Structure formats: C-alpha cells, structure tokens
Length: 596
Image 1 (tube, one colour):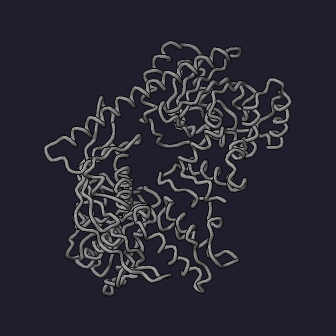
Image 2 (image 1 turned 180 degrees about the vertical axis):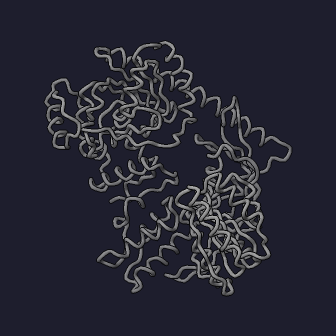
Image 3 (image 1 turned 45 degrees about the vertical axis):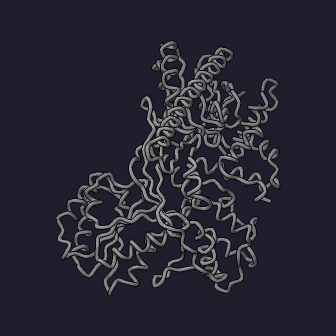
C-alpha cells in the first residue's frame, strides 16, 4: 500500500480503507477494525495515545504475568522484540525490551507503560484489535491504521479469566522484523496460555485462603454473623442470612464490597441500614503469600427497624427546619451529626464523594443556625506556586481570625503534601476561642494521610453517596422535577423511576439533578418514560467506571438503542462477538428490555 505523509486526513484514511478491502490477503477482522477506526475518527497521520498517570500495575493479571514475562525477556535477550501486558482497556501496564534501538522507536510512538492503545484512540493495532475482537490477532506493517505504527509487526492475544472467561487484558509481542508472523503468533499464544494458567493457580490459592479464614471465623467460640467476600464470590453463614434481609441485605453487601475493594482497610466500620438499624462490621483481611484474598466481616446488627415516614403523593420528605430532601437513615444521621456539631461551634470535617451535597448541607445549616455570621467558601488554590500558596494561606488566616465568620475550606483533598502541612501548622497555632468556625470538606477516596489536620476538627461526618440512600432517589427526582417544571406538567412513570433507582450515580445528587433538569426542559411535558432517559441511566451496575469504560458502556447503549435492542446486530456493528457483547452488558448492568 502507498505510504502517505503525516497529517493525512480522514479522506485519505477512507481511501486506504478501500485499498484494504480490495487486498485479497486482508482478513475480515482487519477490515472490521479499520471500519471502526474510521467511525472513531482516529487521525491516521499522527499517534495520540492517552496517558494515565497511575495505571493499576498491581492487578492480579500484572502479578501473574510478571514471572512469566521476566523469564521470556531473558530468553529473548538482545532480540528486537518487546513484550507487553495491558489491561482490558488497552492501558499498557508493563513493557520489557532489551534492544536499545527498539526501545527508542517504541517510545517515539508512545507504545509505553501508561499509554492507552485501544482502537478508539489509536485505530487498528495489535493490542486494541485483540481487545475489541476478543481474538488473537497479527497486525503487520501497513495493516496498522496510524502511519507511525506501520514499521511494526504485532501479535496480541486476549487474556481471559480462567473461570469466568471475562476479559482481563492482553499479551502483546512487537517487533520490526519481517517474515516472523507465524513464530510471533505461536509464541504470543503460548505465553498468554501460561499467564491464564498462573491466574487460575493464584485464584485457586486465594479462594482456598478466603474459605479457610471464613470457616475459622464461623467455628470460633462465639461466631455470630459472618460474611466473607472478594471480587469472585460471597460467603455468609445462616446467622447473617436470617438477621439481615431485604433492602438491608443489599445495602450491607454494597458497603462490604466497597470496603473489600480497599486492601488497606482493617478495623471497625458502622453503617446505617435502610431499616434504621446499624450494622457494626469488624473487618479483617485474608492474606496469603503477600496476596490479598478478600475480607472477613464479623457483623453485629444494632437496633430495631424503624417505620418509614409517611409521605404524600408527589411530595418529597425533608429534614425539619432545614429543607433538605431525603429520609434514608444514613442521610438523616449525617445531617443530625453535622447540625449538632455546627450548633456546638465545633470545627467540622465533612467527608463525601463529589456531588453528595456537602455544600448544600452547609448552606442549609448556616441558614438555620448561622446567627448572622458570614459564610465564606474558600476553594483550593489553582496553583501551588510559592506566590499562590502564600496568598491562599494569608486569606485563610485572615478569614479564620474573624469570630463572626464561618469558613468552609473546600476540596482539601486536592492540596499537595507541603501545602497541607502548612495549613495544619497554621490552624494548629490558632486560638479556637478567638477564631471563626471552620468546616473542612474533602472526598473520601483522597482523604489526607496527614492525621494531624483531621484531629484539629472536633467532629468528622461522612455523607453517604446517593447509591446508599435507598428510597431517596424517587423523592429527589420529584423535587428536581418540581424545581425545573414548577407548573407540575412532568412526572416519571413507575418504570422510569425504577430505572433511576438502579443507576449507580457516580456523581451523586449533582448528576441526578443534571439528568432531571434535561428531562424537564423537553419541549413536551407529560410523563417521563424509560425511553426518554439518557444512556447513563440505562444501567444497573454500581461499579465505578473509568473514563474509558464509561465511553465503551455508552457506545454499547447507543448501539442497542439505535438497533431496537438487537444484541447480535449491535455486536456485529461494534466488531465484537455476541458472547463478548453479553459479557460487557453484564459488566455494565445493561438490561436490553429497558432500552425498547
């Protein structure tokens, strides 16, 4: 095929695509990949692989592959061949290469750890096409979509979970040698098979370890209710099964999964259940051979179920005196604790995911109990240059020195270590009796490791994410509909409300308000049906998605909606098998019946 100068347009790409389709040696898999690349509007004249700052290099796939790839690297010493492991999104997790010249050429095209080589960004290439098709592929020379990659020959093989058969990532071999396609593909298949076998062995050891620790907990002198889980499965004894049922059961599992996903967490955690009871969880980790096998929970349920407040049709329950929508026990407890701390004059640390309502809560409580004091919101500085941080710290010092002021420091989790230490020192040397009231707001996933700053606050309150506020989504949806359609022309059908309640809402109340605002602005009023909901609401999985996963989920949703929920046609158009399509739909919680 003719080479074109960098900067070729999509028109040139379409011309090359026609040449690919006419080439008798072109395989349907490559032709389909080029078609997808054109639809993604990938630029063939330049490489543009996004870069992730902190890819998960400690995943089960990466750990299983490390010793195998290390041995292979020793065998390929001085050969111009590179080995790579990627995750299922096409992020390069590791790369080994012993040939200096090849290293330079790979770096020049961004084929390095941290870069994303999914078809959506780089077009047809070994890694991206193997992941998109779910099949081993050999992409040689001019079969690459982006011109800068056409000097390379790549053999990539998807790596599947040995039990669930879900896609974990890919193993890729890249070289500049010609005429070695058969050998390269045979080697890539062999290594991928070894990695899958090692994953199976590790999974088996991990499952046995978790089961043994679970049995030890159940056979202790006073076992009580016991739960054990990891990403592979859940085990619970009869005491827990009978003590926690219905919505409480689902809430407990949701919280437990989030805790289990953090291998650093051990200790005690209390969570409010939808019934009004509190579950106290004593968490221990199951560890074997420096590997985390999961979490063991000893559960104690405290209190009795509380009757739900009676709410008239079309109304939204509010916290008395504050006007805050919501009646879930988790939300009411967080509001009560925040209100009590504020009224007592304590310095307060509010922790919550983005969009849960930290600012709304502070404004509501200030209106009710501010006693005429001025409320000042202080954002994290945009820059941590010496001039910017000095100016920011001076503003904080001056505001805190005014007893008639309530100072809210927002997004403290965004502060760098040095600035956080400076802020801690400033606040620690303040006379609380002569200063204004301080409220610190941060997100839980990035809470400061500087415990001294936390200890300066007399009270710490964690606001629950919307996915844990069971029952409040319906009330919030009604509230926002009334806010943006005061005439009351719009309402949600029962099916649409059910779909809204299934959503994971990663951006919490802020995202729900945005969705309802868009629905309320439709030219036609009336009842909002399922088909009126945007794609982001057509899922039921509570899994927090990466940006790339969200893009893939939305592409599948749009395809299904455009093709009247026809899974097979959508899979064909996306260039994946029907089995892969169903796996992705299960992963993202996409229900075909909700799309028609």
